[in-house]
Image 1 (cartoon, rainbow, N blue to C red):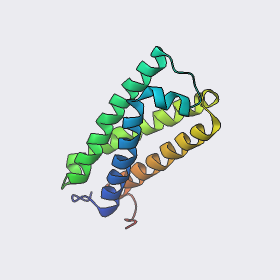
Image 2: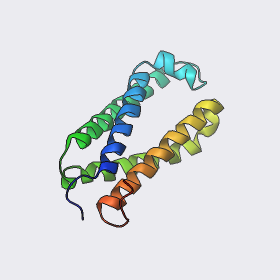
Image 3: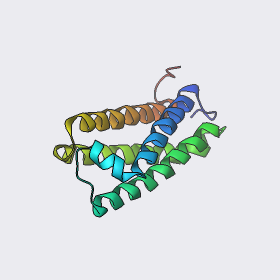
Image 4: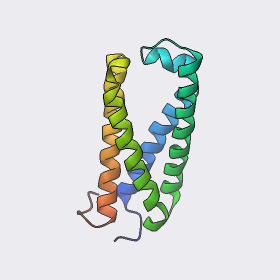
Length: 134
C-alpha cells in the first residue's frame, strides 16, 4: 500500500470538490434546480433537494480535506465512502431516469459514472492493485 497520496488521488479530490461545490449550491436553491431537472417545484421536492445538498456539502468538504491531506491512511475511508455513495447514487439515478428531463438525466449519469470511475481507480492505485496512471 502506498502511504503518500498520489497525484491522481489529488486530482480526483479536486475534480470532485469543484463538481460537488457547484451541485451543492444548486441543490440549496431548489426553486432553480427543480425546473432544470424538468420537474415542478413543490415544498416536498424542494426539501428533499436541500437535504441532498446538505449531504453533498459533506462529501464536498471531505474531498477538500482529502486534497489537503498528506497520507493515504488519512483519506482511505473517505474514498471508500465516495465509492459507495456514487454507486448507490448511480443505481438510484438509473431507476428514476424517467422522472428527469433527458438532458439532466444524461448529465447526472455522466457525473456519477466519471466520479465513480475516478474514485475506484484512486482506490486501486493507492492500494497498489494497479500501476499509477500519473
